[in-house]
Every structure is written in structure tokens, then in C-alpha cells.
Image (tube, rainbow, N blue to C red):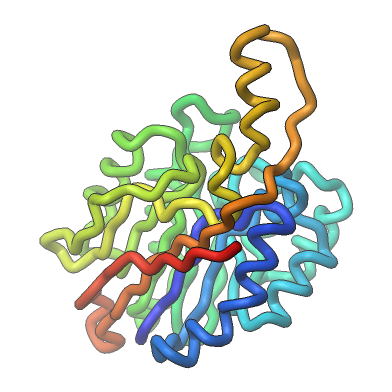
Length: 255
């Protein structure tokens, strides 16, 4: 199985480059399963049902998220009836939606870190719980770990090595160069990067952010528009064993 994972889609520029290139990537790269993190897809903060439906229509099979998943209240009910839009599994009981779905014979898990992040339950123990309840026949297992610090992400990679096919980090919007397969057969990268405007500060208009740093005043953040890039990883997995056989970064530069 060949899995495409697209890093945090940021605002309308990110959605546009996905719309322009996703079908070509799927065809040219022989993708069997296409996943994207969409927690910044609505103007940089959250996702709406309409945006999620548009992204599914483009050819994405599953959508993961993170700490901004609940920014748009209209997504609450949608999460409950749309299992292929995930929120981090380690949110406390009572949060709408779920953090794992099985689609195309692949279990897709969404977890969120706790260091410098909003309060959640332990992602490591949540991963144990999800894997324990998963049908053992489902060998291909993909994890989006939405976390702030690389140490926590790397720790999760080692913790799940040999138990999942891939652990790919999101949230910091900057792609990392530690793409590798761990000894137990788990593909790993600390951050997939952002799909959105790179003439920015992690997606936000750079002049706004510079003013905020210089003045320490609360300033409304606005999504940037220019120099759009699509950052993703492509992972090959042996379906019989669930072990990753290859992982590589895949980047497309747009307008």
C-alpha cells in the first residue's frame, strides 16, 4: 500500500494547491490512500463541514486535525457523523468525534502532544488503548501525531516503533529532514510541513507577525497568500506485515 500524507493545509491557498495537484499526485505516484491534516484549512483556524466535504471531493480519503479542530462550532455535529474527519483521540471523554478510523484496510490514528499544548489525556496511553481495541488483522496503521516539540514526537516514534506503519508529526508547519524507517519497521518524520503560503510566518501574514513580535500587542492574525507550497510524505507499506518499506518527502511549489 502506498500512502500519501499531506501536511497541515493552511487556508484557501493551501486548499487551492491541493485542488490543483492532488489528483495528479495520486495518479503519477500510484497512491492507494490519501490523507491530509486539515486543522488550519479554514482561514488558518479549524475546519468547516463545507471545507471538509470539498477536500473529500478532491480525492482525500481521510482528514486528520489537532488543537484547532474545535475552533469552528459548526464542525461539532459534523465530527459525530463523519468518521473520516478525525480529532485527536486523546481529548477527554465527551469531546465530539473520534480519533481513529479504519478505511481501505488501514487504521488511521490521530493523537495530540501535551508539551506547550492544550490539556489532553496522555497520547502514549491513548495510543496503547487504540491499538489494543484494533482488529489484529488490520496491519497497516498510520499515525498523525500533532505536537509542538520534536522530543515528544521522536519519543512517540520510538514508543510505537514496530506497532504501527508510520508516525508522522504535524503542527509546527516546518518540514523536518529526519525522514527514516525506524528499526522496527515504522516510517517516521518529525513534521511533514505545511501546505500553504510560505511567504509568511508559518502561514500567517509576515508583516502582522513581525508587528506582534515588535510591539507585544494582540493583533488579529491573517493568512498569507503568496508562494504556496505543498508538503507531504509518501510511504510504502507491506500490507502483510504492516512494516514500512520506504518513505520520502514530496514537495510541490505553486504560485
